[in-house]
Amino acid sequence: MYSSDSDGLAAARVQLVTYSARLLADGLAIGSAGNMSVRAGDAVAITPSGIGYADMAPEDVCVVALDGTELDNRETPSSETPMHLAIYAATNATAVVHTHSPEVIALSAARDELPAIHYAITGLGGPVRVAPYVRFGSDKLAAAAVGALNDRSAVILRNHGAVTHGRDLAQAYDRALLLEWLARTYRMALSYGEPATLSPAELDEVTTETRRRRYGERRASPP
Ligand SMILES: [Zn+2]
Image 1 (tube, rainbow, N blue to C red):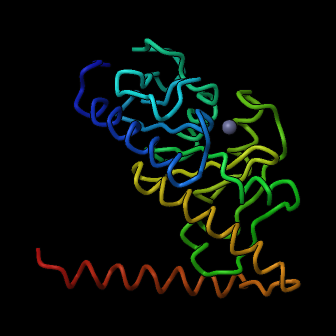
Image 2: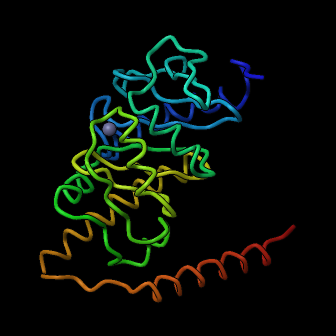
C-alpha cells in the first residue's frame, strides 16, 4: 500500500532536487523546463510544474500512482507526467529524464535520427530516433515517445527536447548528458562534410566487448 513517508520516496524527492540543480548547471534545460521522475514501487516521484529548479525543495516534488492518480501533492505534477508514466509502463526503467537541451533540439529540427558516429552511442542502445512533433503534455506525445523509443534508452522529440531512462536517476541523467554530447559531436562532424557512421555489425561488436569486459570486472572483484 502507498505510504507518503516511505524511504524510497523520501530519497527520490532529495535526488530529484539535487539533479534538478545539475540540469541547469549542465545546460540541459533553463528555468523550469524539462522534468525528471523516479519510480519507487507502485508510486512515481516527479518534479512539479512551473517551479524553477533553483527554488525547488524536496516537499515540492509530486507523487503520483502508475495510473496517474495524484497521491501526495502540494504542487501540480509536471505537464509531461503522461509521458513519464507511459515509459514506466513500456520499459523496466526506474528513472526518466526529460531535457530541453540545445544540441538535441537543433538536431530534432533537421534530422530523423542521431546516427552512430561514435561507438559510445551503444550506451543508448544504438542510433537514437526522432519522434514526430506532437504538442507538449499530450497523451499523443507520450505515445509518440514510447513508439520511437522502442529498444533504446533515449528518444529525441522533434522541436521539443529529449527523454532518457535508466535503472536509477544517475544512469538516466548520465544518458541525457551522453545524448547531448553525441548530438554536439555529430554537428561538429557535419561541418567537415558527410560523416562516416558505424555499421550495425560494428555497433554489435562494441556491445559484445563492453559486456565481456563488465563480466570480467565482476569476476575479478572480491566477493
Ligand atoms: Zn518538454
